Length: 299
Image (tube, one colour):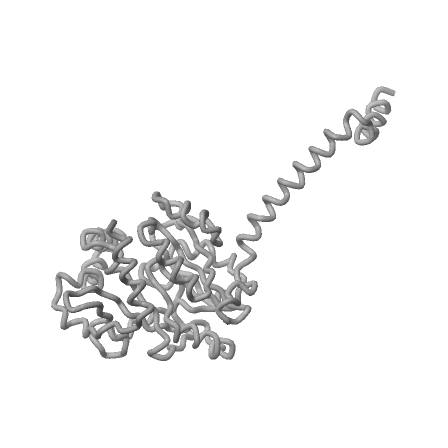
């Protein structure tokens, strides 16, 4: 009898004037919680859904950019992306301890937080590969920018490729007494050669790996893009010599010997500049970005 009365009252509660508003409020709260969960799911599911249409890029293409302690130059990089019509998915490394996350939240950027088992971008990528829904993805570092020619290549050539990944030539940019310089990014030119970065890839067709200085997966079934379809790399611009020396030391700690091997790549000031086969940087838009990056990174 008591149980029957209890069940009757329970069924009537939503219709009683006194309790109707309470029930409505509870239902609103429940809907809000579901919306929050849906939002977090969307952070994983939105990648590739026409995100780069403003730049005229394919609907099944997306850009991701791991970010860690990049606050000094992050605004300049974000503005450069926006000028190209790009809206990357910024992957905030939860080890990041500066204002990078605040900057991206203030800009209402696409954000996803993740943590790799090792403190480098390749490890971070392992955890997010399953969340990438686009057919093709380009991974940029937080000190890189695609060239206009690279975007043209993605727009016109990428949709017809069956390869698992594409190698993108990369220019390293440096400020010298005679002006702004860049490495040639051509096979056989300087110690870098073309410095192909195999970070334009199909997530469903790659085999992940923890290896340092890999793209985060094994390089196979790859094609190389044309020389003009290049990335710009601003590591020498946004980080001081001391910061780059610490990076080399960290590499040695992670894998003995690899830091010393990479030192010429990160510390050009300690090596003969003729090794790098520099040429003048003449792209006016990139020159403007360089000036802003150099100013903001060392404030």
